[in-house]
Length: 173
Image 1 (spheres, rainbow, N blue to C red):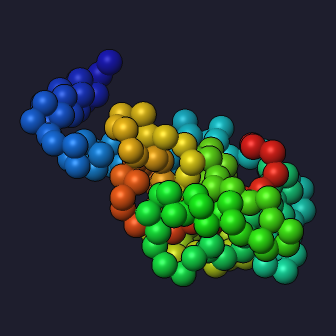
Image 2 (image 1 turned 120 degrees about the vertical axis):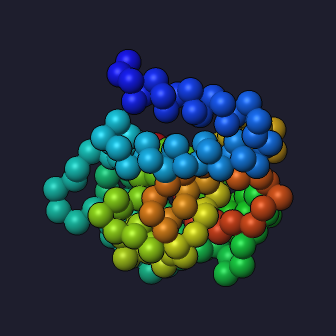
Image 3 (image 1 turned 180 degrees about the vertical axis):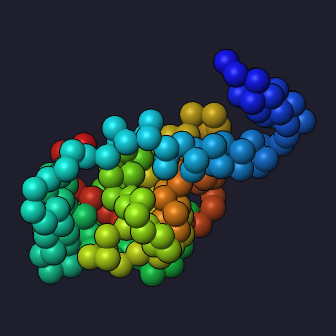
């Protein structure tokens, strides 16, 4: 490990020793946001698909790279707590129903690192803000992973916080 990496590690450890839960989540989110745009995060992206990746079908979008179908817009115009977001996805009757809240891996496949505010293909209506996933955030009970579509970063969010939600259906990617 080079000197800069060693110094950075010591600085992070020092701050973690005195940080409260909110500070730790902020540190993790910052590190994940940086990692999400790094080359090491590229395997989370689906393989390139020849031709047009997204097909708009009414208020839904079919992703040819993952085989998933997404809601074109948000499930709600309001920010929702995690449980309300999950319930809203499951109750959605758009195009025959069968909707659910996406996993973090699925949600990250929508991030377009060549765009920002929002960092997603323009076929989607998207707030440049936090979007919920179904994936638990392991460091803390009552937290789930979320994606910040302003720049494409990811981090943990408390279930009591408000976030947007986009529903998905199909087999898990």
